[in-house]
Image (cartoon, rainbow, N blue to C red; front, side, top):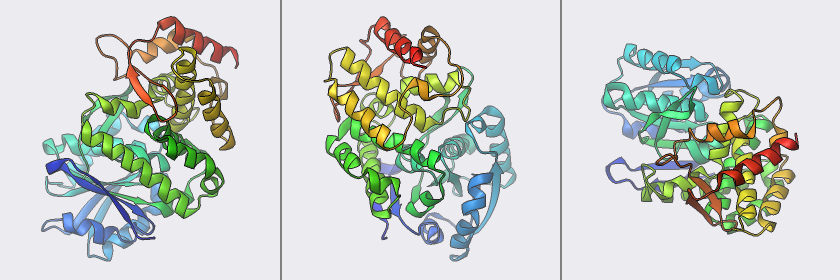
Length: 372
């Protein structure tokens, strides 16, 4: 499959997202034009991803005479922390990484966010390339320059905007994902149809079987359309002063749930996004903003895909509705003390608002917790 480029037109910070099969094997040819005099890169990955893909990446680089050294981290959301950020930056310094060198983030959203943040602060900014290996990272976190780590106070509260120089989204690597990881990433794909492209959501409904079977053509279209939508929004609002907040549909609920579950395997990020989107559409219907058929349609599609969609789908105990609301107050979108929600007038018609009664949110959460 020939790679399809999606251009993120940010002037001097512009870059391409290349989507297709065999990009790991072509990594050397793709990255070589970015390199200066030193034909080497440094790679940061996690142990699970490295076991599956690092040798293929090394071979692709070696084919163009590019050497690499690699640092492997522990998989999981808990790795996005101060301790591991320090470990990565000190290792990069030990490798004598210069501003014109290339740091490669090989992995999912955790690796991309952490390594991108390390690249942002190292020598006040070094270049990096994203090679996302999860569906979630390919369609969302690898594009747009958001980097960061988590705090006990909340998710992604410490970070910077630092755009990559290139993104290589190899569709083939998605075949190695566990069913749970694949479906978690699909939560972000659904989000794009819900926030701004009803036709895409209809295509997702019709293509459920092909997507579950991970047929390459269906995956390529799903990833490409998601990246196109994100690129369009990022170009309009690079640092999230307005429209870019739409990309956080489902995330206000999701981030609170992730904090409540300790950023553990009890709830993967994409699972939280799917539940958060279902909650956001149910809240929209309760407030009379969209027809009740829309949250029902969303829940039906999530169910067909075998995904989490309710608070009752999260294993273990959850805190009270009041505590979850308090955790939502730590969200980055809070402005002048008011929680900003992404709600919808219908599928494909999301909008940002702070005009949401606290009691309406608490009632929604209480009902969800009662169903556990």
